[in-house]
Amino acid sequence: MNPSTRIRLRRAWGMCERHAWGWMIVEAAFRSGYMHGPAVLYHDVIGLAVEAFEMQGPMQHGRLRRRLRTKGPCLMCEEGYGSETKGFVKPTIVVQGRDLTEIRSFARRTSSYWKDDVCGICSGNGSPVRCRGHLVEEESAGLIADMSAHRALISDIDRRLNQYARSFQFEFRGTNTQEDTAALISAVGWCSGWRLFLSIVDAPGIVS
Picture (cartoon, rainbow, N blue to C red):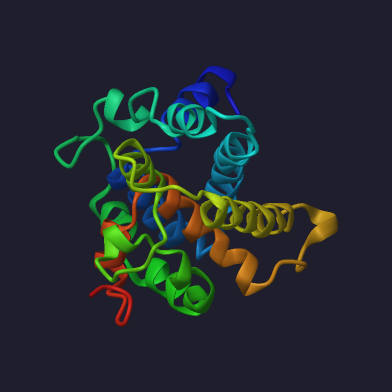
């Protein structure tokens, strides 16, 4: 909730792919899939995409591309956190934080609702869906003439993720569906990339 931290996270579209999915793994491992923190952050970040896609005018694509680009470094990378970082954490805590059981369970029970949102380039499955990074690359190369499908995808993710994030409030407990919950995976994948996640959950039928 720190304003300067939130600004840095928004400029970086959350975190880089490695740290975004690493955070998801840790949150799932320690909170049994109770993903409140990631839901709040990525709903905020996806809101930036919604605003970008709502632009109109003859230079829409150019402005959209500039708005979707990463404008700052990953917060965790900038702070120097990597695979070799040392800390004062008990070995048992490290082992628990690296346990993939919960993230795989989270992915498995929601897969029907996020699998169609996977970037075709990240997965190599030929899907026309694109994550933010690959959308920017292809739009820059003039390979995308119509943004309507991409706009619709972001609008749908935003709507469902809003429902999921809101369900953590006391008065809305239990109002989210598995479809809403899956939007968190879709949002992180769209913002930060899908390759690492797909390798972690070993998603058959999605990766070519």
